[in-house]
Image (tube, rainbow, N blue to C red; front, side, top):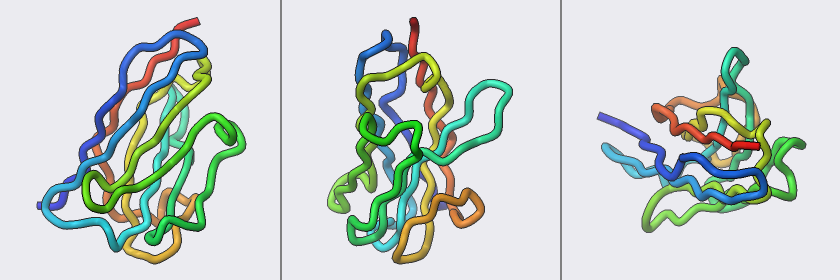
Length: 124
């Protein structure tokens, strides 16, 4: 059974940092492009960041560009999301996703595998 599991979420104050990790089981995802999406309460799930199979190109949402960094280490967990200068509007459930393709995508429908999500809450 293929599974992606996110970790690293939690409660942090405005301006703080968190590092999310995405671990895979059931198969290896080093040949997959990986992405992070988030869903705030009462809103649709939206793209955050994505990294292609070889590590580039990388894409970011304009809302997180300059504050978040996506990276991957295919020898350990497939993908990380370093989140700095967090704001209350970053509060959401964050999802890891895998796409069986060389290049990453900003589109939710391009990803075949999804994790269950990890909650990130930024207090003001």
